[in-house]
Image (cartoon, rainbow, N blue to C red; front, side, top):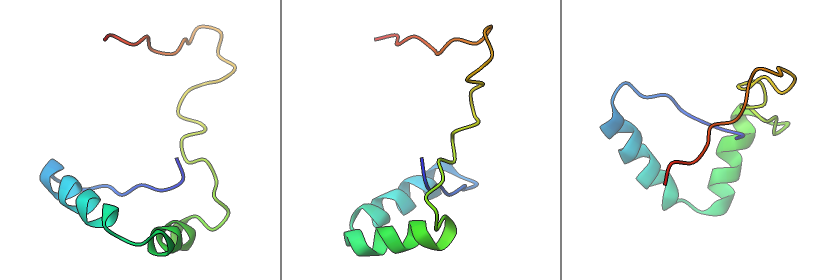
Length: 61
């Protein structure tokens, strides 16, 4: 993940996502590069990669 926004309400987030989906690719890239110019993985430290007690969630389809 290289970009995200936080919203107070789910409806706001859905509205914003739908607007962004209609954007041109160049606009989306500019949005990412304005906030994260080096394209760092923003989720890289969400799960401890070296913690032996942690395991990824299993799908529940």
